[in-house]
Image (cartoon, rainbow, N blue to C red; front, side, top):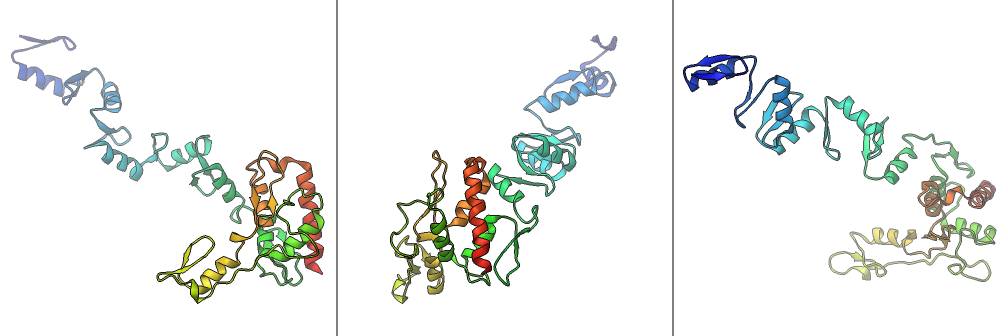
Length: 291
């Protein structure tokens, strides 16, 4: 006779004992692992914890392998691949992203970002910030989300005031006499000489497959595209510099430096002298472009 000690019952054959264990509410079998649990909860925990099972506890479903299970998590549940955590639904995943310091997450847009700086740029974009930095250019009236965006507009030469990158550079050189944000070694000396070097490409830039920039050797599909590249700040002297001694990152444009300051990447924005310099420059810029 074979005994089931859990149920205090006896059976004439092994087959009868197995049938009893499969049908009895006192037994919860994992036939694959040949294990018997006293409760459904115990069996479920075994499915969850054992590497022998690819099991979704939310759906009480088994899958052929880990890849199939992960695909199921992503399709049917809230799954954080970075933390390898599964949530009942998208709301649970949203709350996890919102509260976790491991994730760079915009809760209102429900978007993940790869880095803190990317998230900061997103939060500083027009999606989240009003365009309340108004262009002072006569007849313009456009609004921007930040000073750097306004400066980029002015440097582009598209403002009705007629301002462009050379105008901005001359203006800054005139007023930043203590070289707080400019690098004196990069500034041309004497008179009112321009800080811009003009590069122009001709048809001779064609190398057989593209129009090639003779400075960086980048290839472009058209001569116009190459000349647009040459007219950009890419190859201009980096006359601006972050004033923080431990940073000193150079920039070819004031808008680039301003964007660096706004990003708070190196902490230079906390210094009063930098704040005052930028405030003073922007104030004078308004008088320059409004005239």
